[in-house]
Length: 386
Length: 185
Ligand SMILES: [Zn+2]
Ligand SMILES: [Zn+2]
Image 1 (cartoon, rainbow over the protein chains, first blue to last red):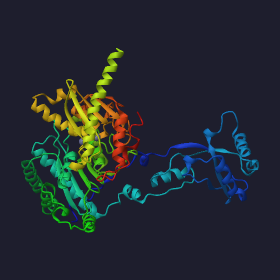
Image 2 (cartoon, each protein chain N blue to C red; image 1 turned 60 degrees about the vertical axis):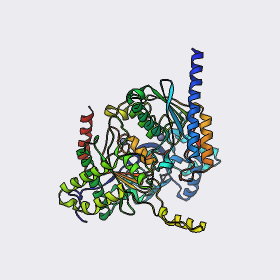
Image 3 (tube, rainbow over the protein chains, first blue to last red; image 1 turned 45 degrees about the vertical axis):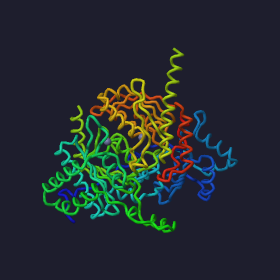
């Protein structure tokens, strides 16, 4: 269980997060002032909030502590308004005084020092890195998403999980090689796994060709899962399944020793699980006339819905079309080996899995060994296309 | 010229009427009511309705179902798929989703007429501009853009979807979806 694929030590899925997780700090200018009369701080905060709610800057603390330059004394500084709030014709002091006047608290102006321009971070920090960057400029509030932090630092998955995952990816890569040997259209293969049961639900090669570019590995995998649930439409033929199995086994046997694990434990399951779908418990059972017991039986049998909660391992980043197919199929997580710069939908051309307006989102991880390798793949891709 | 355009619109309406009939058939089978027909040489050659629940395959949207029928039709009539697709028009009751829009471009279809907009998944202007974008479909996958006309009998497509989602779909935990569909156009 410890050494699975030769490169497993470096095998580390990197999360593909929405763009806002990756952006550098962007700055915006705001007016701030020292609080001269600290006994009025609470009152000031209230008044300033009423005058300038700063609803887009709620990640910034309204008041921050600033140690004075010459002594140990500290000064409190308060955020007032955005630079753009101040209308062009008046001075800042005048504008602020007028605003306080409007809110019937003209005296508040006297509790503050001279307003000055501060640069602060425009966006709510989503990662620890962004939080740290933002904090350099102004005291920042950070609601840390522990999962994101772990994922970004490569600590989301345990050793055991990584071992399992890298084996599934190795299987996908072997299936892609098998597909190539069978002279199937092009490149790529996909493996669907139920991570809860640690069970393979489908192994699919790329069937797309110039006459039907739609039967990609992902689309075939989705249909194989459907077949396992008593549905499905693609007529892939028993012959194909047999040949793929055979070639896949050969492929796995050719691999060096560390993949041995795959041969024993995984391939047998592949043969059973993906190509001879097991009939769900429900069908065999004869439900009692009593409606209640039928309902109970239904509850007990976890009827799978499409690819809900499943993982997909694929050698290539799914295209925009396939990514959307995975949204429709309610996939849980997608692990891809190589990015697909020209048409990839999970990081390269788009991030379909995190698009706001879509009704289902999933996690995507890029697993290629390192950035240099990614660059190389990118280059190859373009060479192929040009 | 004005007369010509009116009669073209009437023709599109009549085609959309057929697509809506396919959508209603889908609904009778317990599917999301989306339907389409493909017209080649001025004649309807194939139709397709949503088959997601029946096949347990979430990619079996009306458009992809119709494409499979078109392939069959082409081999029966010994015509090249490429030619037929390039000269056909797809009439679909709801704006094609992102997946279908890419698929239609990949197979080389050129013209789409749709009913109501699809605010949740639409790939022809609502969520993404798959139909006209160049960058994602360059080189190997490159085909010409899809020429789209939307809003044909949109109200009727919306009605149909509403009646479906109000009646609750027992198979899909996604009910609220297309409430806003169609408003955009
Ligand atoms: Zn694809
Ligand atoms: Zn679609």
